[in-house]
Image (tube, rainbow, N blue to C red; front, side, top):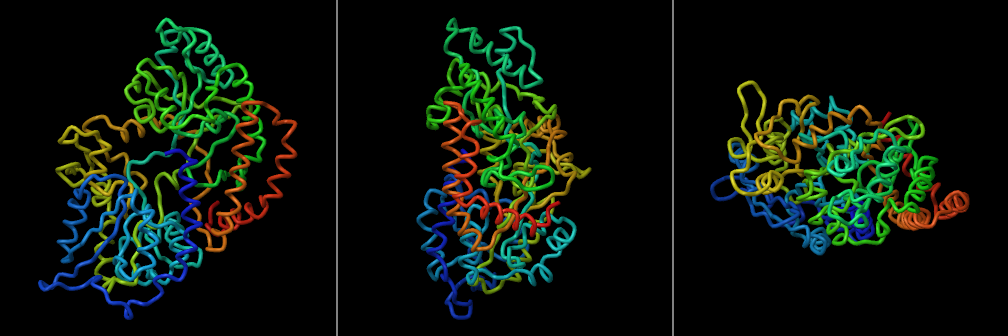
Length: 525
């Protein structure tokens, strides 16, 4: 999903969160509940709500989650909610009296939802101390996990996760290797060489179909087209939803007011004028983008995304990662943000409907092992993963016709839910057949050396969240419109001072004050 779409959804959640304030303020003793109830067979039963991106059935909990619950003597009543339905249902659920015992998955509730409805959620500090030895050990040894577990008021409401088999480098630029070969060109290593390659793509019949005019040298992929084109200038943006914040010279900065950003705009405008940039790059919708990326005869020379297969579909075998190009400062940059790619907060929250949180959280503590984590990421042992006698793991080929990625989503919690692996875990994992994770990790080895610190995964107070929702909507809209104008029409040098003054009038100083406060409190260095 595009960054802009994710930010829109995120900011909408922040704004609607205010309607939920004060909901669920009754304590557990005042509410009638079956949460954590004991059935006739004396088995404690807990209702857990989780949001799923697609209707992939109920197999996701039939492996480790259900098996471990049975071993712990509890039963889980899963409430599976489709993401497409959750937007309408969330407010009603939080405002009503029929809360589940817990929410599993960071895609269920935003930080604003939680901040506005704190009375509905248990403070978990004491439970972690007495019921969760695995998690306690992790929080004591991993400062990132400790930071993600701790809300702005210093308490734990949601449990964090660190996912296995995740890269350090995120989205990256790809280039059509077949086109390079067709034209007898070498792989570029500097930004200037890259521009020369794009010029050749434009001027010659790079795809070999007899039409020298259908090639688009640089097109829109599945990552921000400006930031990735301008990477050699130092526009190394982090993950989606990080407010375009970055770390420069060990301090947080807003990328759209940096010299790197301005230089990148100037360079992209020159490329646009030369016909090297898709003229529809700022206006096309997703279907137009996809029709170009996945055209039967490839027409895109270079674009950014997560992997070649997820970006170019059936054309993936023609594309390879573009090297980290040397820019004007002689440095090489990549988009890296492991705190957001690998870690997450609010993966498990217990509501005040739960009558036996001790039993529930003792079960969840079992999720914080490497055996549990890889099963909750790919699927259960023997079905999706084989554990070898030497402590290594092998991700098995799907036993049906689905892709490895789809198989994992169908048969596990995948990106969501509590989990944790150590620093050397990825080296223990082998793959029986090629898949997106394997190829991404293989590429990661060649680019990780260029990774630089990114803005951390921080926590905001409710007041800060409300201010950000207002401030960033105006700021980001102005930044985006100015960016498109400058790339397509030019004028960044002449308009730069007025642009900065306008951002100041929109509250940029207040916005940065909030970001710097959250950054300082996170303990990041």
